Image (cartoon, protein in one colour):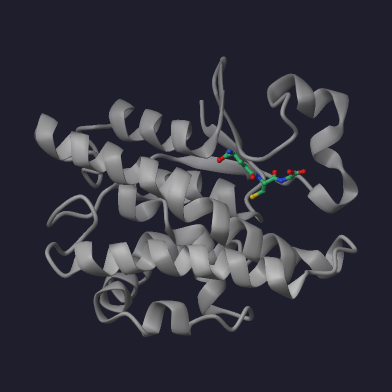
Length: 215
Ligand SMILES: N[C@@H](CCC(=O)N[C@@H](CS)C(=O)NCC(=O)O)C(=O)O
């Protein structure tokens, strides 16, 4: 049974897509138009009661929350494709640590910027410049810590690419596109090199080619 991924046009599902490609897992996608409210349809809510994408259906098994999905597939196919969880329990601990940092420190300010700047015009939201500045300042503080970390190791969890790096791809990509906030990455030498490295992986290029989204 081929894995089905719902909502490939949006950033959080792209976390699942890039992971599945890295692991060499076959999948198909199911479009969910958030602008038409398809994520609020009763049939969809049976799969994802919190009204968001992604959801993955793997035979009889249904899973939502993009970071739970990537952890699940990285573990399920540990012996296949790119190793994304580290080789030792210590490496795994660091992968988990930086995944948590991505979710709780990096994601909130970048999500706020993306929602207001990129999606705002489509949903009738006029951004408040003061709030945008606050989010950008918070993001800068996180990126300064990344700069320090990446001056000591090639990737966030160590000298190996992992889920911790992969999880940053979908939202960081916005900074580099129409949003015009590339300088947040380029002004930091080690963050900039890390971004060039992780964003040039064939898996991510394929995701962007097939589901270009609003980048
Ligand atoms: N924590 C969830 C968040 C997913 C999420 O924010 N999805 C967005 C698209 S990237 C969404 O479905 N937004 C629709 C809405 O919130 O109404 C995850 O990582 O899966």
